[in-house]
Amino acid sequence: MKVKILSTSDVHGYIYPTDFSNRTDYHPFGYLKAAQVIKKIKEKTANDEVVIYIENGDFIEGSPMSEYTYQTRETKKYNQKYCQMMNFLGADVGVLGNHEFNYGLVYIKKTWENKEYPILGANIVGAKAQSIIDQPYRIIEKAGIKVAVLGLTTQYVPHWEKAENIEKLTFCSALETAKKYVPILKKQADVVVVAYHGGFEKDLESGKPTERLTGENEGYALLFEVPGIDALVTGHQHRKIAQLVNGVPTTQPGYRAENVGQIVIELDNDKKIISSSAELINTTEQPVNKALESLLIDWQHDVEDWLDVPVATVEGDMHIHDHVDARLYGHAYLDLINRIQMDATGTDVAGSALFNDEVSGYDAQITVRDILNSYVYPNTLVVERISGADLKAALERCASFFELQTDGSISMTNGHNVVKPQLYNYDYYSGIDYTFDLTKPLGQRVARILYHNRVLEDTDKIDVAISQYRAVGGGEYPMFSMDKSIRVYEDDMPKLIAKYLREHKVIKAVQPNNLKIIK
Image (cartoon, rainbow, N blue to C red; front, side, top):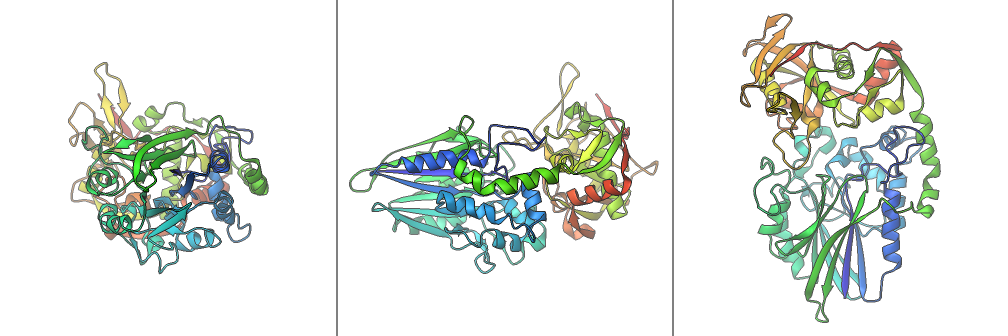
């Protein structure tokens, strides 16, 4: 007897094979391709096989399509399509990712209210009372085999999320929760699967930490400290992993449905496990599932029409030609984003990130598509009153992302994380003049900070506009915290950017010169 455990994770709203860069764009990923893989495997299930499909979180946020879906939730109700897709594929269980909470609890409830399977969340206390999860685990019986699936979500959500989006919820350690439930499930099921929206904190071969051990990722500890786990499904880090670790098959299928995770467990006639394996099934060459596509066609057309609406024009060049240079010396696009943050909050200092190297800035005409492709998160703004010492510490964190090479060139590092690039945790600031000396050791690189042409002292106070993600200390910025906040704003940044551009119509691209580099 074989048990096949299929999984998707971190789809991030990429349903169609496109990144929405233009109307005719095609990219070899997307949930419609993953759906074809899952459907084909299910259709070919042999009599001695059991197939379980797990959707492992971060499904409804992260693309222009998901942003449109959220903005039109009261009129179009396209968020119900997420549920229809899961029901169409016969999902057995779902897990909430950290980004599910970006749109709040009401949206989670409305999105999944017609699902035909349970959402699991054993380590989110209060989630059942808030009607966003159904139960901690599910025992699925098929062909006489009992498969238990325990659902877990990274405990680090409160470090990123707005308080009102996780009201009355407590996120507990995935490790400690698994230690509680796995022995219970082992007595009730033939196979115990942990579906964890989280990743690995240590190298899977050497066991050496690959990041600061904050509790955000506990996958390695789950594999080595919780006896009885027969399979581990992971996500969150967007890594591509399929291997046996400490004898346990584990998968992580990447990003945007580029792969489907598959774990195969073989049992003997006494229902004892005799072998197991893990693989990723690449979706690149797969066609989209036509039956599912037909259910979504109006949704796709409405999204594309909305994305092509013009908003403003640019005088000059606001296109990003070199992402390292943009972070190293500032860029007209980043300066514009900071100016929008200042305009919305009434501050004269702001910091923002160039989230990834796919962000291209703006061309001569700016459309809704350009706004959402460049600012990909529904961040809201917070103004914090911090000390000069706090700002210096934040800038030291930023300076740690640069690495001076022996030939004098400068490259970007992952900022303390050797596994997952975290360039979204590097901020460029406007409203101050500052200098990084990259010849100095980490922690000693901020050579100068000027505010209103005066040296900023450690004891000075300064108001800074930042995202709510950064305001709660997200990205290893402990100098920021909500107890320092003096104003909080509800409108998200894509909305504020669109509002500013519509009001100003013509935007002049000006290269900033407030960040100096010594090398």
